[in-house]
Structures are given as C-alpha cells and as structure tokens.
Image (cartoon, rainbow, N blue to C red; front, side):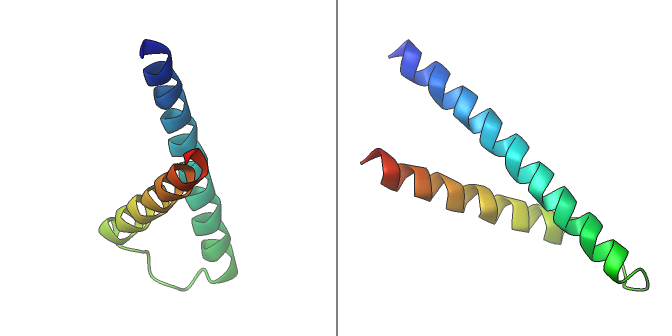
Length: 65
C-alpha cells in the first residue's frame, strides 16, 4: 500500500506542477496579446486552477478503472 501512496503523491505533484505551468503560460500569453486588459483577480485564477486539477483527477480516475 505504501508504494501506491508514494506513486499517488508523485503523480499529484507532477499534475500540480504541470497545471501550474500551463496556467502561467496561458496567463502570460493573454497578457502579451492584450496588455491594456485589466489583471485577473487572484481568486479567479485560483478557481480556474482548482477546476483544472479536479478535471485531471477525474480523468485519471477513469483511466484507473
């Protein structure tokens, strides 16, 4: 069971890093395309990140079945 827990932690860390990097790139690209646009509220970015992570979790749950 500990091996499965370790794998879950590694996968979770990888997904967190990947989703954070993807959100950062998307946000940077949006800022470069429209520099006059106002900044996104921090809460909105966090909510988007949470949704992406939950979507990835559901996807991997489906793959595990």
